[in-house]
Image (cartoon, rainbow, N blue to C red; front, top):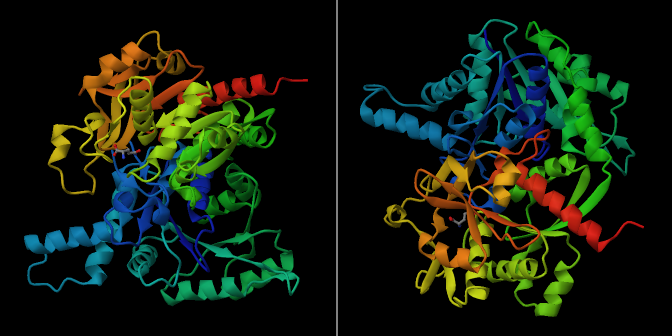
Length: 540
Ligand code: GLN
């Protein structure tokens, strides 16, 4: 019988509920259990695909093409369990389904209400995702006390009522701050938060206490007593240097042992040697590289979450630390050649990630021109590839006004354009080229040797494409197409063979990178940056 672990958050947001959920999933999987996840998001959008990364951080794309919450990225990276459309539900989706059913007459004669109709639909989503696994980990978005998440909490509460004892565990992530003026850590916010959870009928079984220092035993006892949680289940979730340390820390605190016991699961001890080695490699690199990430959403780190992690993984594969500096591309637009070279010369490699809209495009073009001319390794993802194509068309092929029809609908040279089937599409949600597409790699190219296979699958999220009409010209001038999707004959990878490392891809490789299986493109890009760094700073 499937067990359910509900994770709620209290006191404030950003305590790392997603990472806690992912870590628990990892530990249980290492104990031989089959796990899955469901992220419940309280907003009314159907999915985060229409939200600005400034507001909501990265949109994580799954194999099956769902535009989903970035916590699904943590789940995949920590457990290697493939997530999809079913693993993220929003208030918008739940209401949409209930209202659609109401219009179909499914509730004929009844008054459609939050309880039971909305809560039943939430419970259906939970049961669907949980089918066939040992443990389903359900992360409730938002903070306890928010109006928006109440139906999710009510559905979570009903699970304990509906199922036999020992089937459901409630974990509450809370905050235990150190107050400098008092010189001590304070438990009151946790007490209040546990009480708020009780108000909606949920008694926490386990508390994860986020803190910047160890919680003394007597304070754990106090929390245990006031919150009515067993002392062993008051778990310190201390700040750690690397997110990949979180599962090891929680294991030391006994969390997975307690969960297995509370849920009456028959599970062995977890084998954590590989993961410990991963953490050791992250913390003890042999070398370092500096990479400039020239983008638009630089003020919120969450906007490039998977990208950031893919670089951590690539660093591990190269036994190096990757120092990323996020550069707002607009700030490059007012610089002359000397200013630009001064700003960018500190980097061993330049990356231009995905993005939308016109703002900052010219700054990205300047950064790419600098990387191309100075033979600095360059990696462009999605919009980054499209802008590299525009730069090449303008400065190498002499098409001064080349652009993408995304920013310049009237350009005489739409080197990046909309396919006809996209031209009539007005709806914004879920209408891009999304999810996993096959890509065939051309013999003799960098892409082919990097992947060392002939065909790959990668995840997409974009509307615009390289215009095939210009490919012959680009290839003649030194930029080749090294990957194409066979289904539609679309260019997926471009590269400049006569450059130390210059690759652009139309897909988002960052979503498929794993801590112990760095993505080949990130791995080799970081390798090229290391080589460039060694040349610039020869060993003594
Ligand atoms: N804006 C571009 C497009 O829609 C690129 C999207 C992206 O970088 N994800 O094609």
